[in-house]
Amino acid sequence: IGKNIYFEETVESTQKIAARLVYEGAFEGTVVVAEEQTSGRGRLSRTWHSPKGTGIWMSVILRPDIPVQKAPQLTLLAAVGIAQAIEKCTGLSVGIKWPNDILINGKKAVGILTELQADPDKIHAVIIGIGINVNQQHEHLAEDIRQIATSLLIETGREQKRAELMQAIFLQLEKLYKQYMAEGFGIIKLLWESYAVSIGKEITARTMTNAITGIAKGITEDGILMLEDREGVIHYIHSADIEI
Ligand code: BTN
Image (cartoon, rainbow, N blue to C red; front, side):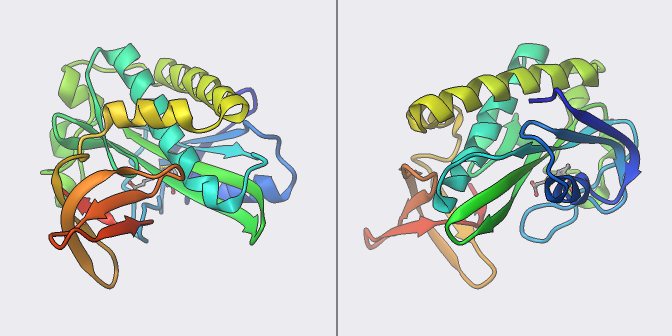
């Protein structure tokens, strides 16, 4: 991972470039990195603020031979790898909020967006979009997220070398991905759970159409969140916004 890197100055979204590269036959492990995104995409059709020079905005292309319903496992794998790399490079301790927000002191520093190119029964590629707030000062975070977001600079009090962190991420992702392909999701699930901040707590899972409140019981073998409501009914959450 990270042996082929496409560096771009300004792009709409690295996800878009990566999708084109997949179409053109890019190898697994190819990465697209941009200094700035003009329409960075977040989960649930939100935008992702990606100002010039202060963050890591990148997309990683994987081509795993796994069933489509196992794709969420790769999102969780990515979150674990990035969490490990950030801890290694900064000395901070981080948490993961399902499925893949990385929090530092309760605030979000990293977002991950996984997009699939797949037929109903076969994955052609998984594009893992990673956005990391690295060197933004508090006042440079977008106004609408300033209360809930943070950056590595804010949390450590010093500038971080983006290239170093990126290298560390590629290394961790590659290690975990090899382990995953060889041994399956078991170890990754355990690691993910060791970072999870919402398990055992009361949370609300909000989707476009409804909201369910209950206790987060854990994740399934496929990486789906299990939520037990007040009646004891277990809900399986594939995609939602979580409030803790
Ligand atoms: C989230 O909503 O938490 C996910 C944010 C993902 C942002 C990254 S930045 C690089 C890649 N390109 C995009 O347009 N989005 C992802």
